[in-house]
Amino acid sequence: MQTAPQTTDQDQPAVDMKDIVALCKRRGFIFGASDIYGGINGFWDYGPLGTELKNNLRDYWWKSMVTTPPIGPDGHPVQIVGLDSAIIQNPQVWVASGHVGGFSDPMVDCRETKKRYRADHLVILIPSDDTPWIATIEDDEDFLKARLKKVGRGKSLNDFTSKNLTEIDLAEYPKILAPDAKEKGTLTEPKEFNLLFETGIGASEADKTTAYLRGETAQGIFINFKNVVDSSRVKIPFGIAQVGKAFRNEVNPRNFIFRSREFEQMEMEWFCHPDEAQKWFSFWKDERKKFWESIGLTSDNILMRDHDADELVFYSQGTCDIEYKYPFTSPDFGELEGIANRGNYDLTQHQEHSKTKLEYLDPERNNEKYIPHVIEPAAGLTRGVLALLCEAYTPDPNRPSGVYLNFDPKMAPKKAAILPLTAKDGQPEIAEKLYLELREEFAVDLDIKQNIGKRYARQDEIGTPYCFTIDQQTSEDGMVTSRERNTMAQERVPLDKVADFLREKLK
Ligand code: ATP
Image (cartoon, rainbow, N blue to C red; front, side, top):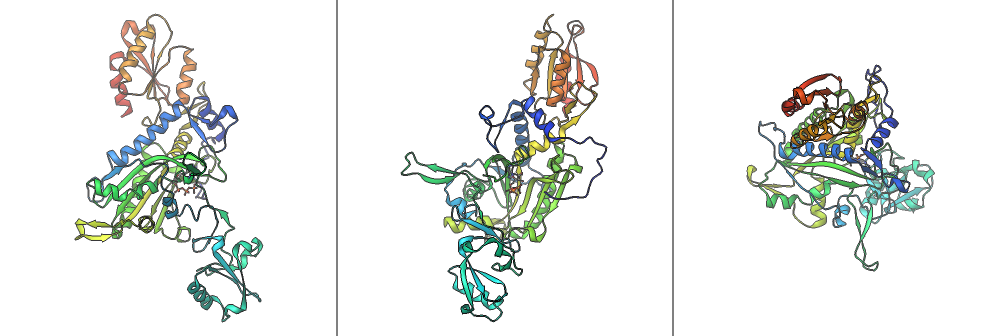
């Protein structure tokens, strides 16, 4: 979470996350998983409306990526194909990707070089005086000598005692000069770097082998790069998109669905020629910002944050986070999507570990052979749902519900509700007829009983843009009363024009 210049929204009432969570439960958007058993930390169930909202966001993302992808810098639509890979893959996939560093060993990160080491692979040379303690890599004789020559201040190996990092007290870490680092004290404390959930494959305990639930959808795309190139008509530059569940054993799940242990991602890997990576990186940054704005996130609540050079992982040539001002981060922002220029790191890793060539033969560039570079817009679907809910939540003391959800109609779980004023006088029959007609084209709700005020309140709280009320007069004049969610303005509309009316309003 990052600090950003304070924006001037003092006049808007502060929204409390507690109220959003309560509405989500009350109206059937999101429930704590395993509620009746006392819950389970970091897991959530999506109720009837939460599922519709999530599907709307997912489908719109898919449309914007795969069905009608954007027009590229050359004036022609870019090419992106879809994929749905398995959640469980060969465990080697996660070794190659770096998610499993020798399975469950403690890892340390260097804050300066951004390199990650297995703690038990680092040997620390300890001098008798107060010169820095030198961290070197075990079993790498050449590295050890070179390091000593560079930072050993004329000392030889005999002038040091040595210990493994795992034997060294945390209090001594500030003295340690990490491999390749210029400053002392840049190693983090060792962490069990295994956010991956383990599972066992095989029916009997004896032949069970360990496998992992995927920690991101991206790796499924990289390992299918060759399959897609060989089986489709795609040519570089092109993208592969995937939406699906990802699992991370987060140490500290928090902030409602923001950081969960099971969540959904929408990721696209854009494969391009190395010389064009920077151009496409800028392109996708712009496109992704436009996407979130097009579904109702206001630009005041969105921050495009380019990572500083010292924040980048070592293979990344640029990363920009799209951050959203969630109520629990405000006035700061929290990550919604990351867009990264990953170079050819991932395909190179998989080529090395799988021993399968992942080079591309480029017919447009005289059959030049290269490992494509990758631009990755990686968004959280469930974090997107949270942003939509936070953005839509609008307290309004002037209506019975005291609040309404101001969803962009594209995202609203229900586009309209049909409400007969009373459950008699032929009104339910007219309502059902209208419902059967509209539901062919729109997600509509038919709600017959309860007083009308309560039914309006429900539709306000679930963010339905239009309500159509059938009353006594309807059977006489063939008109219904439409009520608009935000203004509560009412107007009479002919029954047989309701579909046209809705189509026009939702455009
Ligand atoms: P963070 O820094 O918040 O842990 P990340 O940088 O590790 O996120 P990525 O690996 O880039 O995240 O994943 C892409 C997207 O997946 C994120 O932008 C976020 O929207 C979503 N995401 C990642 N972790 C979680 C989680 N634990 N719960 C919900 N969404 C998540």
